[in-house]
Length: 356
Image (cartoon, rainbow, N blue to C red):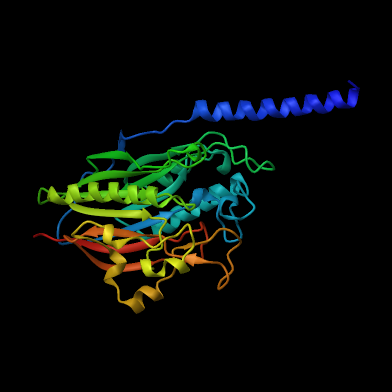
């Protein structure tokens, strides 16, 4: 065998070993976090009250990467990391200051990285806690993925990310609930998903039960979406039947403005949320708005397949709140920042707990 052919065969053998080794690593490393009790960082102890008005904000901060000119590779863009460590720190700081400027009683924040390749291992949760002080806080890790060797020019790497609840009122306990996800081979490369269930005592002996979620995206199957909605609905209904106030918020990864008859006009990753799947006594807060008010709402998210170009980039409302009928929504707003710190903008509402 001549020398050039030997070199070619050795290179091919090395590539095969590399691929086999990587697949073995992914298979061995794969794990799901499962349901678990969450630690509550307690700073304030005053219980919630009926009758008074509360302010609530939900914000997917996009791990500090999605400035207006950023496109993410999983959405069709080019980038797999944030621009720099400094840009991550600046964007998380900016997002935190935006939340603080609204002075919410409760803030529900998604895509908060702890130690991820894509965000230069910045501890974003710590930055948020420093920027939004004097809150009780709960963190639910959403996923802990294996190192992704793609794109080859800038591998996405390992991701540790989750959901952060900030509350001016005591959280007696909190639970991480693991969403159903794919059970096929794609599960090794899919992101894990969860929601947290946190309990805030109310002065009338009931509890305000806050569900903080980030549902699956990227065109997952109908079966997975339906399973996630069924599980969430069952848990919310159980709390309502126990006499509690139930509030669910976050990134639903569904088009919350559209109805199912509009599905053909929606992107594959943003199907209309099937309202009929919600339990009795539950509804989306934005459904309390008139059609004209709903249409006039700023879309809470943009497609990250390209930089944000007003009037050109696809936008959609993925973020919002579901409440039980013993909660009154008194004000609702999708905050327009032009997607300054993330591919999402905050959703803000005011509400009251009804004393029946």
